[in-house]
Image (cartoon, rainbow, N blue to C red; front, side, top):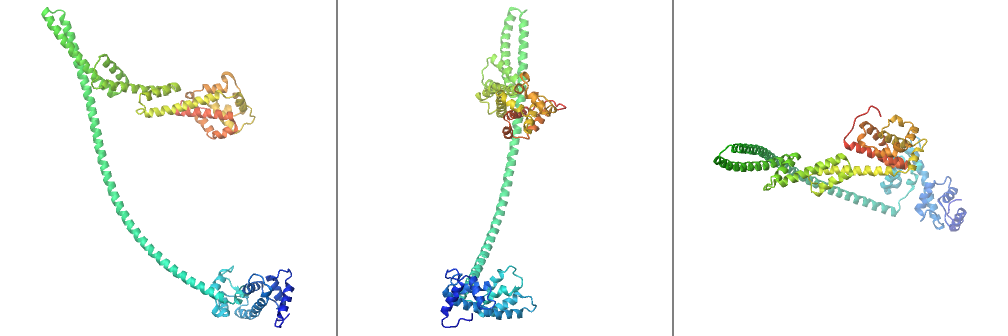
Length: 520
């Protein structure tokens, strides 16, 4: 087609433009531009070169009619420049590998661009390569070699350079500030560490002083307790001595009184009158000694806290109609009532009957002994809750419909959970485990009626009749499953699961493990 140098090049350009613009959009795509130029110049340009030329001369990524002339001139510039650059590239490629080293490529680029060489663009080119350290082919570098920097790009390069220098300066300032701050922080940390050490030393000294004070207080408290114990012991000994002395004086007065009474029988009138006076005096002395002995005996009973001794001493004190000057009678009565309440609570717990246990606990609360018997009341409350739960489960067993029991029996090949639960139930009811291996045998046991019915046997079973190895084996069978898991499979099996679990818990809480049997 030749170069466009004639005067009427505008008409020629229009003809050329519309010859290749086949879609009537008023623009040529990079591929269409590449085809046009390859028809003008042998070999044409690579697609990358065409794209780069469009970006350099055109507003958009396509070429309009008004931009075609400038674009063709830019493409010609690249085309003829590439002829020289290929030769220079081949000169550098002494080994004939069609590649040159990175250093050679940089030299070539710098030689072509001269003072407009941009280190920034070169670094960007190297970083964007798939293999940054590999040798460079001509096709890889041709676009970069042909690019001529514009004024705008030079200004942008200068602006970026200045910005980089400012950023470096700011980074330097920030680094110095950070370094300064770090030094200040280190200084503060050292001062803080020093203060911490001083504080730790002071705290340690204070702790040592407190420990010393605590040790002194403990020793003083220990000494005080020992003295109190010694005083209590001496007091007890004194009470025992006083009681013995009172008993001895009472006996002596009683013996002398009997002797005077005996002597009165054969005495003369004058002697009888004297003996009667002596008898009255001795009777008064014996009564005083007896009252003294009763008072001391009551104090001893309070100290001993023995129920029988308290009961006897209280009755004797009340029978003698003595005045309660020291409030010992009231103390003894309160103490006896508290001991009786405690004994009643233990008896009710041993009987394990809900009504009696509730009555015993109510008595303790009514008389204000729940604080003194806190531990016993807690145990009784725990037992009461367990007994009520067991009673509720027995009621559920009693209300269990025959159809639900029949559902268990109806299984031909029961789920493992149902078989395990019923095995545990019949173990607790006294059967050996080998009897329940065959499900037909379990079906037969479930189907019994009358006194041998499953419901009746469950209701009548007492946990104190069980043995430890039976309970432990049943527990091991049930522990494999959760209640929700059993309930999802069989409602009837879930009821017996709850009964068996409660029975096992009741046995274990009793602390009565029973006698081991050789076989389960």
